[in-house]
Image (cartoon, rainbow, N blue to C red):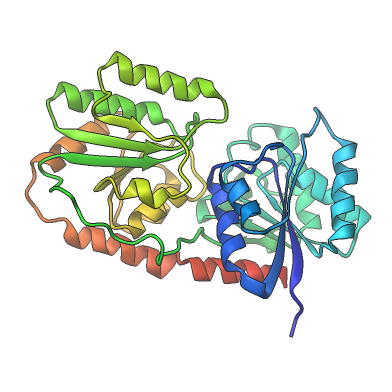
Length: 363
């Protein structure tokens, strides 16, 4: 029997987002098959999911990287690898790959695993694309969270070592994310929720604009949002929009929440207006809780849909608004569609399948 491997997850940020949600799931569910360690080099003070991982008893190392290549960071990583007898370095998104390659040169025995969650951060710069292709020959596996991400790598980084590419979709704990009863019929009042980081990619201004349109049309609704921004400005801008358009009684911004299920339970309808995604964890969680999901028509949402997501065109300011108005007036039962959403998650995106796939890569 293979001994448990010591795995070091190397990330830039460890606070709130899709990467952090994946890391939390791996930390809580891999059991004694691996011994997980976490190193973040852009987060000095732990909060959110990073603190939750630390509180669960896992070693979490923090560091603040200086501009450019930071050789002191390399020294710190070498120290951790030696002291904790690390067998596997698992990097997430583009940033950490440079340091993983340097570590591989120092410790040839290391097994390098990489998960690419999104594409938009590095494909815009040629030097990043060139390095990613070079780095792929040092990695045992490069895991893509969706076929969209894999195809994007092949298209934008054609010299990447193809044999190391594989897809492991994000997974959801369906024992934690359970269906919640409707407090009121969706036809009488639209009870809408979203869980997303406040950032350009999540495009939350579109959802807040939709709320304004609903108010102006006299459609009764509530909208609860969970998530915050890395800096105060984006959140403050949305709060100002709410005040400017008199939406205080209908729109609630809850900030960071440890339990996404707490927010999902407040609504019957889940909204996502993302411009870009890798594989949308929040959407999967909403599907598991049997929400009606209205999502922007982007490739990762389409790939995840399996016929249960209602997709709309972000180029049309009123596309989501029109769908919600139609939902408000229609009387057709949507129970079967909501149940099917959970069945899709159980069949294709189970937490158990995802965790075991990662454990297998470590061995």
